[in-house]
Length: 62
Image 1 (spheres, rainbow, N blue to C red):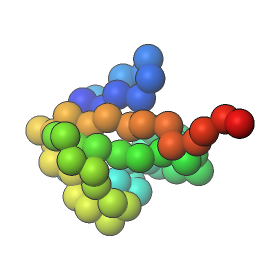
Image 2: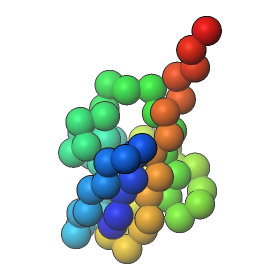
Image 3: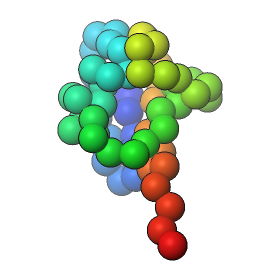
């Protein structure tokens, strides 16, 4: 799978849950939303190794 977060890009060859993906990208403690193939996915959803994943920063400044 190809994972994009801002200007960072990762590639993973195996399916994994969103939680595992966030740990692998060191974003597990960050306020983010994860989209796989254009749909919002939750922490226990499994993402295919063929997916395109976009991680979006969910924090707003004020």
